[in-house]
Image 1 (cartoon, rainbow, N blue to C red):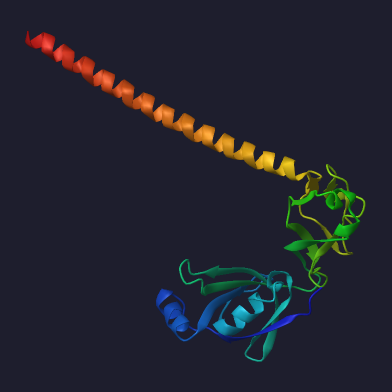
Image 2 (cartoon, rainbow, N blue to C red):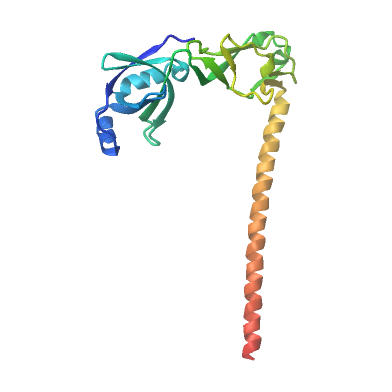
Length: 235
C-alpha cells in the first residue's frame, strides 16, 4: 500500500457559506473529519497542498494523517467536491479511522504481460469492463492496485473476479455475482458493438420523434374536427 500522507489543517471556528467563501478567497479549503464514534471536526486545509496530494493518483486509497493543533488524526479521504467551472476544490470529507477498521475503497486495476497474450498479439483489443474494483480492506493494508496477468488469453477470453488473487486483508464489496473485469475482443467485434449501440440509440431517437409527430398530427386532426363542428352549428 502507499505510504501514509500527511495533511496540515487548522481547526475551523465558524461554519456557514460566508465563512467558507472567505476561506476559499485565502486559498484554503473547508473540510470535515467524521466517524469513529466521535463528534465531527471542522477544519480547513491549504488548497495548493490538497491539489498536490490529489495529483499523486492514490489519494483516495491512502491513509491521510490530518494534523490539527499538534495532533494527527488518522483518516481516509471520502470525497472532494469541485467547482463546476473553475474545477477548484471546494470542500473535502475525511473518515476518521479507528484501530482495526475496515474501509470500502475503489482500487485501480492494471494489466501485465500483454505481450504474452496470443489474442492481443493477433490484433485483439483489451476491453476493460472495470477500471477499478470496489474492495473492503483492512485500513492498514489498502492495496495501491490490483494486478491482472493476461498471459495466454485468446480473443473471446474473459477474466472474472473469481480468477483474481487479492492481497491479504482485502475482499470484494460485491458478493452477489462473479462479474467480468476484462475481455479480449476482436477489433471488428468492438466496432460492431459500437455500431450496434449507435444504431440502437438512433432508432430510439427516431421512434421518439415519430411518437411526437403522431401526437401533433392527432392534435391537429382534433382541432380540425372541432372547427368543422363549429361550422355546422353555425349553419
